[in-house]
Structures are given as C-alpha cells and as structure tokens.
Length: 351
Image (tube, rainbow, N blue to C red; front, side, top):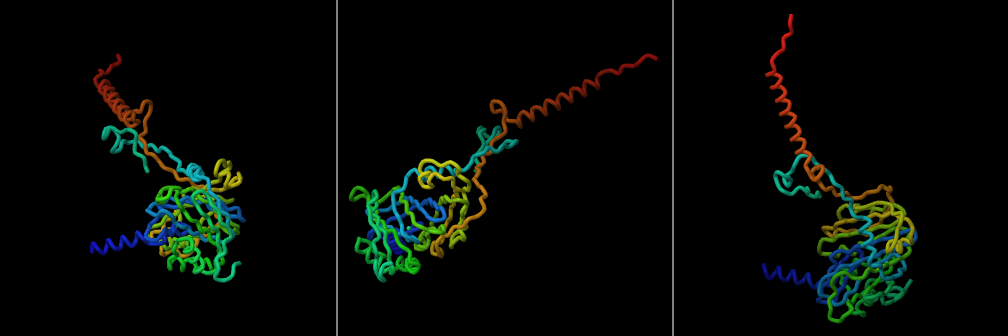
C-alpha cells in the first residue's frame, strides 16, 4: 500500500500539464509547476475586453509554457503590479463595531480581556499561424492561430514543450470556434533557478461584444481550483451559471466614480462599476464551459465584518456594571427610606 501511494504521488508530481484558471501551464518533462491561485481583473466596455492576470507559482520547473485561448486577435503587454493592490483596497470589507450589554466569556469578571472578540486572448487547415512574437520582461509571448490541436502541439514541441493528449482534446472546442491562442514561455532571469513566487502580471486584450472568461481548460486540474475575479464594466456583472462549480459569490459591488493609478490606466480614467467575484471548483472535472458574464441590477454590496465589543463609557467602565450598581444603590436607598418611615412616630393632631 505504501509503495502504491508513493507511486501515485510521484505520478502527480511529473504530470505534464496543469490547469490554472483561464489557461493551461505546461512545464518541462519530469518537472512540476503549480499555480496556487490565479487572480484576474477584467475590463470590458462593450467592444473590447482586457484581462490582467497575476500568477503565484510553486514547484521545481526552470521554465514552462502557458496557453490561453481567446475569441479574437489579442494584444499582449505587461500589466501593472499595483493594479491588484488597488483593487484589493477598493473592495476590502467594512469594519463596524457592534456593542453588547451583558459581559461574555472574555469580559470581566469572567476574564481580564475587555476588548471584546472580533466576529467574525484564417490560416490553412492544419497550420499554426504566428501572428506576433515579443519579449515582455520574463515572458516570451507568441500569438497563434490554429485549426487543429495537432498543429498547436507541433509548435509547442518545436519550442521545447509537450502537449498532452488530454489538453489537445480540451482545446478542440476552441479550434472549432476558430479561437486564437496566446502562448507564453516563462523563464526566470537566472539560469538554474526554478519558477517560484509571484510573477509579473500579463495584460491580454481582444475585441469582444460579450464578456467571456475562458475556464474550460481548468477541468484538467486534479485538485480543488479557486477563481478570484475583478470585473470593471459599465454595470454590475455576474456569471450566467456556475459552469460546474459552486455558486459564484459576490464579495463586492459598487460604482467607482474616481479612479487613479493602475485602475485608471485600465479603465481610461472613466467611472466604472466594480464587481468582485469568488468561486470554488471542488471537482474541476465537472467544469463544462467558459464563464460568460451578464449585466444585472446595479445593487451595491460590501461585506461588513462586525466586531462585538462590550458597551462601556468614560475610561472603559462597563455600562452593565454602572447599571447594576445603580440598581443596587436605588434598592438600598428605597429600603432605608421605607424603614425610616416605619420607625418615624405617628403625629397626632390635637382635638
């Protein structure tokens, strides 16, 4: 049993293709690479779609190829690393205090802690057309067209990578729809250094009259997949369906009137509606298509995290304690008054 488990684990480490959000990552043979989580920002103005992706990778691969299908001719550029920091700041939850009256387990006199607890991108058949090729930082980017997955496989092999049979099968629907591909070779700056950590973001733009986020290749993944997506459009946007995962969760929705920095560079400085989405795919093999997002009502939403705190006044004196003391003092005063009244002798009036 131990030998079988070790063999199974070794097989998973040398698998030639790894799904990662909207594309597929292919390392050298007998090397491994994994994408911990892919976070993407999508800008769509009704005519053009821009996808900015940031990878955080781990493994022992010194170089890898990444393929992403796109519905139209794509332009590729480096993205601004500050973009995701700005988006995170714009969508961070709101924190509010929520007070309670009576002491709880971590409050005096039960405990000395009085702060309260926090609640929680048309060639001849069979051919690969190289539309363009360029060097962008650590990326060697090629924009390809192909009408046969085998032709794409041949191009990859010529450039040092192997296309698995499973990946070729999953690419066929895109070939039938005459989509194109962005193929990227990733290599670290220094030879002999593995691809690890956070890579520079890539920005891919293409013409599209609908907002679509390619996800089909993620069905190749062997482990749980998660998607983090920021959508900047004229209105609130949500996926039409769950495409085989759990129901997408909206973590933020709201209009952004004033944009600056990396967000302004992506939106052209125009006011936009920002929707932040999270989705989990416990069984990636059930993914049955690409995400198509639709316009919904512009209902704002921001997550609120409540921090429950004991109600106090002044220098942190619990209100419950003042209340109890006040009640006791009032009770004692009333008792004393009653007793004094009872002891006071009656005054008789003269006839």
